[in-house]
Length: 168
Image 1 (tube, rainbow, N blue to C red):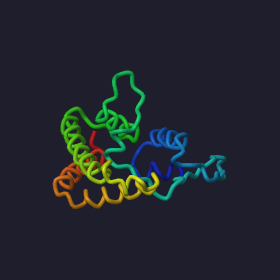
Image 2 (cartoon, rainbow, N blue to C red):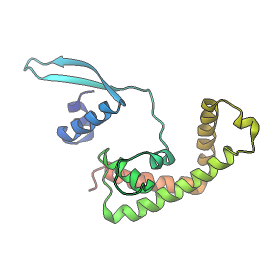
Image 3 (tube, one colour):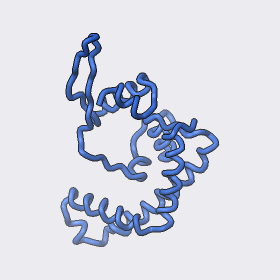
């Protein structure tokens, strides 16, 4: 898709979309696949995702590295990360966003600790890549069965949806 096509689909200004496309391109998440010059001499650049899918859970988002001069705050890192995607949570919603992220992360960490027990030598002896895949799949499964987590996740999605649908 081109920046113009993306901006039309999202209802955002082309300059804003271009800014984010450039960041995603420089981060290696998307790539320019072709260019096309229109009859008016405008060069259209077509982009696509490099991978078929990306998996990023709340825990990974909160553990992501964000350059900051203050001590690392995983909740704030998530909020900053979201703002780079054009989702700027208002001060009025910030307290609830932090509460939701904190509670979801606590549940994710508990489940991860159950799966990745150091005393399970058989599991620990598996190659790292297999352990990670098993942990991700089991964590996803166990979280899907956790009603508290699902309620929190639904509320988190509702909050994010407000901003994706134009709340400012």
